[in-house]
Image (cartoon, rainbow, N blue to C red; front, side, top):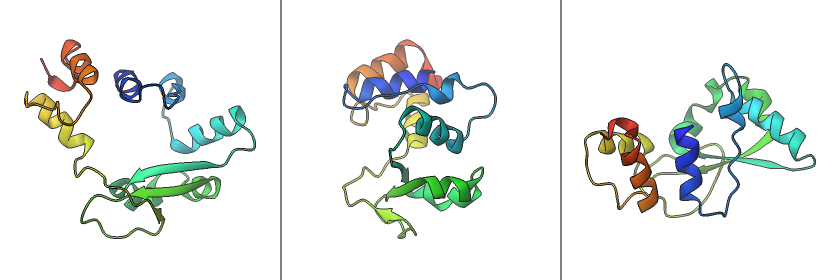
Length: 132
């Protein structure tokens, strides 16, 4: 739930964040989310945007073949990443991972250059990712 709140804060109203996976009991798979979104938004084509690391392992995801029939995949590569088998978006992406950000937070390093100020405040206030 904290990740959902943090994501919502960083988007400044430009994107709707739905708590579908947070509200689901048990395991939650991307395919389940796509199926639920397809019901909520019929006649909509969905694009799954992934980082290069996630794109490399998508074949190992739950029912990946079925998932790949239902969505287009768009990959944002980190600098120096090998090309993927999917369409790629040509934008300047930060060469930083969420794992690295969480580690920096837990080690009490300054992350104000990586996250919006209100997100950093929320993380510190609630002691998320070992920030206390």
